[in-house]
Image 1 (cartoon, rainbow, N blue to C red):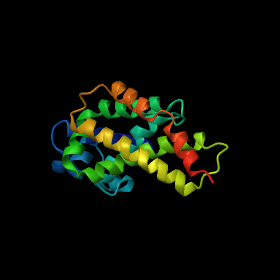
Image 2: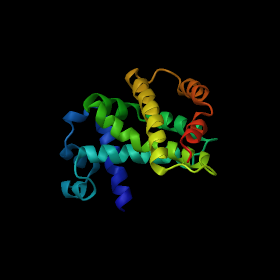
Image 3: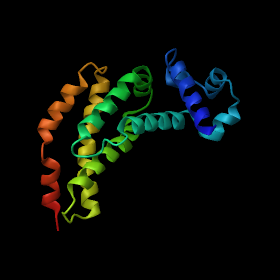
Image 4: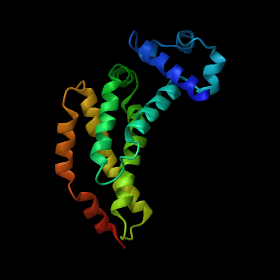
Length: 184
């Protein structure tokens, strides 16, 4: 039942974001739209931003599923773009109402999971310290997040497939090259 309630709260928030900005939405608005009491909201989330973060992470988790390998990272990244696009009113409202650092915080776990899956796969048979793998992942994460934020800022007009194709061309073999540079 807990998951159902969280999903209902998420849907209420998304419904309300079609009508007004995130900064004007209250917990009372969400609970009234959802048909539950405030204490039920607080049982699941500490505040609205906690609900926003959970919603972003859940959407991303579904988008990525098992798309964390060298051969599927492009599909995983495309799924993230498509999940963001499918929730455009929600994402644009959040993007306009919170600072860039907060949006990066939402995107970072998504990209980190995707990139670490690729790095772990590519490092098979290569001895590389975990901190070096994390450093490599952080660099790619900054690239992916920057591209995603620029795309959101541009009102999501550019075709995500073209973005991913360009990115794939640019970084072809670079993960394995980076790992080889750090091997012990």
